[in-house]
Length: 122
Image (tube, rainbow, N blue to C red; front, side):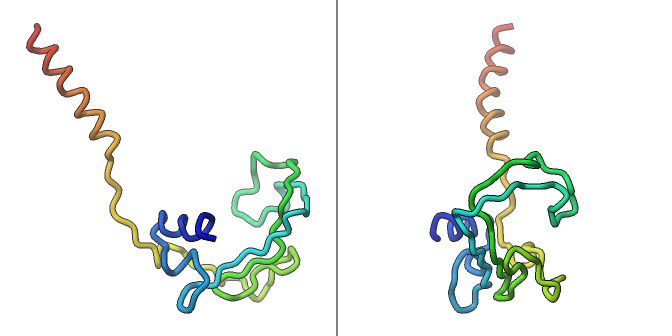
């Protein structure tokens, strides 16, 4: 749980509301049958986008039940109609620092001495 849930929740600024099972946290749980196989079909996706590079790929390990904030949204591989609209944007709870373009800063710092030495040699 620490690697698959806690670490990701912390990395994306969702900890402690997501990524753990504890009082006060959202009870988001996926129950997976690790031996079950299924072939992914684009037409069966429950998504705005009906395309996937995985169409026709057979996978092992299938989500059987899914709970979001303690409520079943998928039970026995079928969506629970009463749960429509139960999802919420994570941006409501997300706490992340502003991004810092460190890679660009490092590239400029490394190039600056080269540009300066080229100009002085000319």
